[in-house]
Image (cartoon, rainbow, N blue to C red; front, top):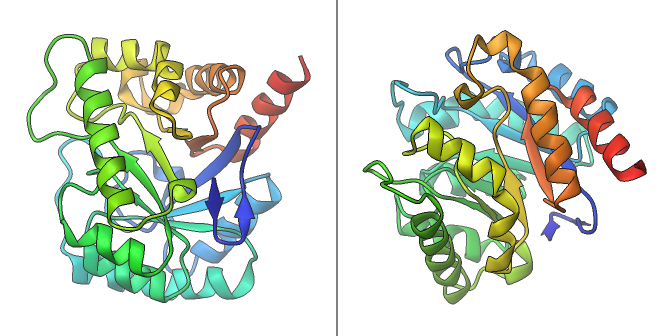
Length: 258
């Protein structure tokens, strides 16, 4: 997969979460506008291959903010990070106007938790700027029964629509959407069989860092996150999107050495 001027293949890379929000569920991922540059530098030093900036929390029960607020939160940190570091930058948004702003400001990828289904214009914005995209499964209604058929059908449909709109196939990756519109049992089943999604023909991103499917308190979920990262590396998942960069990089290194 290509993001910016870098090609990612034959390994498992860490995408570092930098939340420009006051309410994201893991407090240590939150960064102020002034602190984002420090957070980015630390993530890069710890081995992150991609930075993912989010200006809206998507935790359970989150209060949605509008596109203007997202842009206001993104503007200063994004411009500073793009100016200071040579690393692919992803922006986590489902608003086409925010994507347009972010890509015009130097971002290289859009990470859309609605999988290009919330705003049809999103596909055209990404295509017009030659950007990359992560298409995540989501739904306005809860998934019923076997989690895989609806996830697979959604992802391949949205990927096909992206390609039809002119987004290059080598700039698309897919995310099964752990924690979104699924029960805990479905999330666990999806995580256990995540490698099955490789049959769709696109590289995969796994995003389960410290999520509630692991149970217990958020501060106690690092061991389960690292186990999931280790399994992802063994299964050839291209990206893991995580809060704890150093520990996950170390886990991937060990998985590839063994």
